[in-house]
Length: 124
Image 1 (cartoon, rainbow, N blue to C red):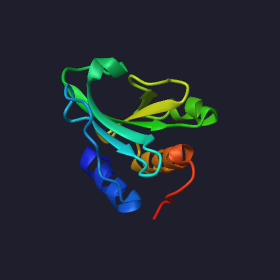
Image 2: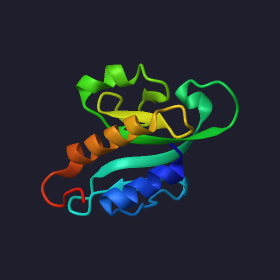
Image 3: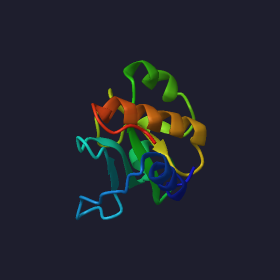
Image 4: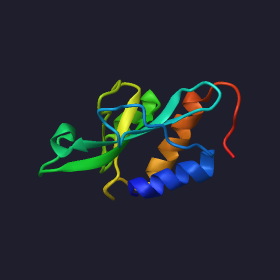
């Protein structure tokens, strides 16, 4: 799954547009709930070595809130990493370079949305 594919999925599934709150990282896209403004996903571009990956350059990732019971097994899957720049006990990062399975990213995205939802707007 690519960044473009994920952004399209979020727009179609949750009717949510990205917010770009960071001046120093203008490509970082935050996706929030309309009712409580909590983040359920953030897409960023990070240096590969920040994730322990070899090679030069950067990779797009998505950070998603994750159930603590799922973290261990998800981290054993290709393309999934301890959360970059967020709580590693509550969030997980997935590479958007094709190494993480798209269905697993969508599953985690749906769970992240539910875990951060609170009361109010539901998935459409």
